[in-house]
Image 1 (cartoon, rainbow, N blue to C red):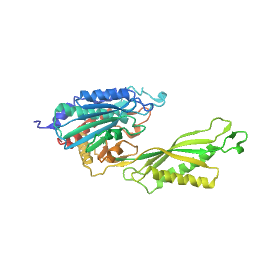
Image 2 (cartoon, rainbow, N blue to C red):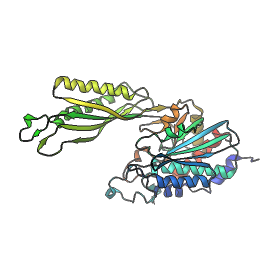
Image 3 (tube, rainbow, N blue to C red):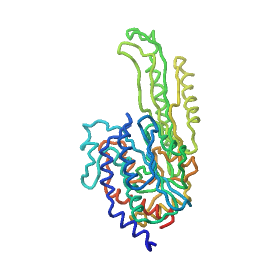
Image 4 (cartoon, rainbow, N blue to C red):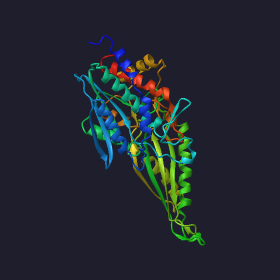
Length: 397
């Protein structure tokens, strides 16, 4: 019997190299779109099998796999899921990168590359922590499930599919970049298409047509006013702040000498836990109808095309307290409890009754940016924090 499980696990962890694993993951292109997770999924499945986990790789979408690895203990008193996504957003303008986004280069103590912060480094850190536990032969009081998903950057439904396959746990960690701090809530989103309609005419006779782009300008001006009003709204969350709204894409017109008969924009509305996509849709339709009342030629169609709810875990949950202690004891950082402005797969676990936190290395402000990077020390620290959480939560800490 091991006298000091913690010492044995951390001795094994010192032999791990989560930084190199993160570099290998970054060097595998998994951009979404178009949805190139397959090569990375195959690589991760091999890593998990080599670590002794019962591993399943299956297509969540055609040729876009989810990977699930389970470390079975002799007891099933409780269990823990670690969730991470395999896909990254596209590179963007390669000319603006100072390093190749697939290089995994380390400069001045920072690891560069697409997915370095969001969120391949956290996956590498957690796998390193788990491998250290496996090699230490410490007996835990529950199973560990690693749930790696495709298409998080678009549908955000991979974790939901894994849960529907029957995988479950008594707590979960989502490894999105949180700067090694504990996030217990995240905003949701509601995304809409808005179309304004006009009437085609030759641009030499614009009065014979109705310019749909002009009509859309009225809608955009009103949306900008609504977005600005949120900063003064009384609707605020202690960890998430206030809701936001942004217009992201605009399309309109067919040719420079044609009065356009349609214009389309996308609207991204970030939700607080007490808001619903349907409620926001109703509010926006009321505001657009006011424009139509003042302008009989203003015709529109608003359609909700994608949504994900906000999510929140109670501050008193055990996994929150354990994460606080793990951070303090392993890396001597004073833990903070915060909220994440972005949307994550946490909502699926919470909806399934699983208390969930977001905890990972890297800064969320680095996600999706040119020259995405994070401090390499955070990868090492994250592996220590994850190992300590596993020991404490599963009965050996």
